[in-house]
Length: 269
Image 1 (cartoon, rainbow, N blue to C red):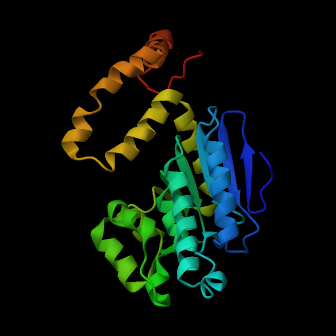
Image 2 (image 1 turned 120 degrees about the vertical axis):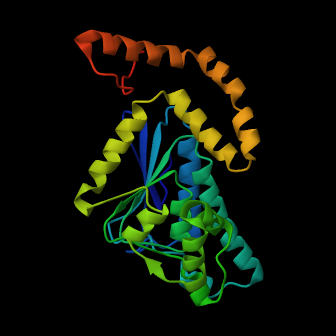
């Protein structure tokens, strides 16, 4: 992959990619150039069939992303504003359309466009002391595009508080309302990410991709469509052979050594 000024990707042998937002200031703010580079990087990584997990993080520990670049925004006109917000839309959609789980590594500040980016991820692992907020109304604009994810994640009460006051919340409130998947001490954050990655890698790669696709599909369907429409996928999974391999590994592991039942067994092939 050609090197990008504002995004770097590190691959692990297991199919895990770590994408770091870089050269965006100490708080990793989202300028047009940053958004374009990060979107390009996510799109390229997502196209790799060997990808199993994507970890998205900011450079350093002062912030995941502390918002959009206000110095660029203050000079926008109508067409420029449309182009700018379309870039943020494209970045968040690239995350949502990634075919594997996307883990956000959150610490420091997660504000505005940064919170929209984090909300687009599947799992948000958070260091204690992280601050969340949507300050757009305090600078004369409503929160749009992926701010619409917040009521689904945090519930209407917390979403209204964030969007109508511009106030920040801490990790205790973020965990309570669902913005944070897990909250740990800063020194435990990377270990927690590693354990989460290991849990995903213990699952069938095809089933994980299919589950991610289903989760996206369920967002736009009625409950009845969601329930009935997945019946054919059960047979499709068996056609791939993956359920048989993982179930056989589970049964064999339980028989050997009189092991307690556990669904964390990974087949050799």
